Every structure is written in structure tokens, then in C-alpha cells.
Length: 319
Image 1 (cartoon, rainbow, N blue to C red):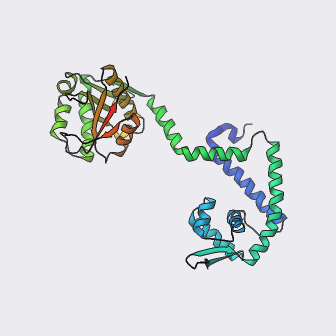
Image 2 (cartoon, rainbow, N blue to C red):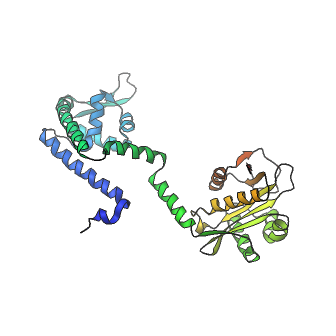
Image 3 (spheres, rainbow, N blue to C red):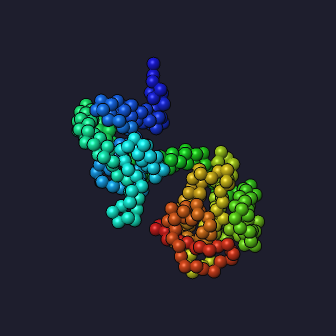
């Protein structure tokens, strides 16, 4: 019969690590008894630091062992109740409160040092019997998770999976109402609709398509949930403007903005454009982050028909 972890696989990594931690903790409790040490396993990090350094503040201990300050404070109180530490002492310069081992704690630390020699030898033996070095693997995983958390990795996989149900198609007349509604939704949420908005949204064919631009529509399971326009500019510095990007709140988190942005960049290149321009507002942090991810850089402010625009950006294309 398959075990629980055979059935779940790696998705239960956290549960398996907790069980392994519990096994080590239970053994640690018995090991302390073996050496006649009245200690709780959770005290060890604090005790070890105080053995290494004669006195420390709670903040210093918390930072060094990677615990929260409230957690360390609780441990210190428990150790003080056991007579192992003296707390709320003044440092040598009288400026901060510090914690240090009591006389009882110092005596106990000498016995602990003997135990640690045996524990380290036992762990080395266990490591030599294993095919994989757990200690080194943990360090590697910690490094990788510091760089990118598991939450972020899962979110990326979620976006990737859901984006497979997204299709980017070119605008057709049947999408005109969605083009307008999606833009009205986000603009009205943060700002006020302006005359320039209605000009483009009410007449996309005349204002955008007939002038050499394009509009892309994101379909999620065949429902229009995102739009973005590529507007031909009559400007000495820029060929096209990326504008009117909107994604329905119910479809956010599916990489749709990224897919639309890439469709715009690709179309700009295909049309021979060298520089792509956009306007936005710094309140829209996810949008600004997306533009940076696409390669846009902030430029000096230019004249704009939109009262809400407070940032202009450009993307220089390498065709």
C-alpha cells in the first residue's frame, strides 16, 4: 500500500519537512535527557549564541538565529524561569539591556559542549550513510528560496497554466463594446474618463485602425477579457504608441498584460517601427512594473492630451 507521501509527491514537501523536524525534536528531547541536561530543544539556538558571545541584546539574538523578536523574548523568559539566563541587564556602556548566561547556565553549557561533540559525530555518520547531503541541500534550497519564494514560484506556474487558455487575436468589429467597456472599467476606477478616451474608444476603426494601427484582444476561454491598442503616431521621435491596455479584474493574474504587451511589441517590429511610446500614471504600480518588464524606460515628460498621465516611457526596438 502506498504511503501518504507516495500519493502526494512533492506537493506535500512542507508536511514531510514538518514530520522530519518533529522526529529530530523528539530525539533532541531524549538526547538532552541522556546527558542529564534540563533543556528544551527550542532553547538551543539562543543558548548556543550566548555560549559563543557572553552577552547579547534580544534584537541581536533574533537577527543572528533568524527568529522573530517576540519568539526570542518568549524563549528568554522560559530560560530565565529555568534559571539559565539573566535578562534585563545593562550592557557595559549602560546604554542597552542585554541577556547573558547565569552561573547555572554557564555550568550547563560545559555539559552541553560534550553532548555537541557526540551529536556532530552522529550526524556525520548519518550523512555518510545517505546518498544525498541533507545539510548542503538545505543550504542550497534556502539560497534559492531567498532569491524566489515558493509562493512566487507557484504564482508563476499558475499564470503559465492559465495563460495557455488565453488567445491573443486581432480586433474585429464584434469586440468594439468590449474594447470600450474594459477601458471604461479601469479608467473610472482610478480616474475620470476624458475626451481623448471617448475619441479612441467610440471610434477605434477611424482613430486607430484606419491610421495604420492595430488593436489586440485577449480571449480567455473565448471571452474578451483584455485589450490593447497600437496607435500610429505623427511624431518626429516615435513611430507608435502602446495605449488603451485594459484587463478585466476577473482575469488578472493570468499573464494577460504580458501577452498583450508582447503582441504590441511584435506588431510594432513587423510594421517597421523603431521606437514605441506610452503614457501612464505612477499610481498603477502593476502596470508600470509590466512596462519595465517589457523593456520600457522612463523619458522626460512630453505634452499629453490626458490629465491623468504623469509618466511617459519608451521602448527602443532592435529589429
